[in-house]
Length: 118
Image (tube, rainbow, N blue to C red; front, top):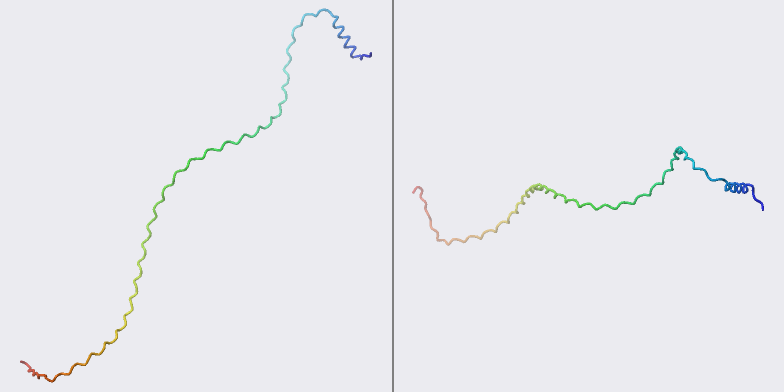
């Protein structure tokens, strides 16, 4: 059987250590070591997720009714109409009929004598 040199040295060291005398008293604790250097700054974290959309707000109240408008002005009085034209003159009437011939006297007439101054 072949053994490597490092294996044999390890075996010999362990075997000799088992044959040593009793262990001496424990030594005093050593000084605390210096504080180590501060580590490098870490990388920036990932960006957070976008937040949820907020709820829709309530509908606003109905506004007040507007005021009633003013009454309009009275319209102007219309102009007086023109006087009508004078009517045409009527036509001349027809001439009347000729009257009947008078009756002949009966011959019984009286003679009247007029005396002036009386």
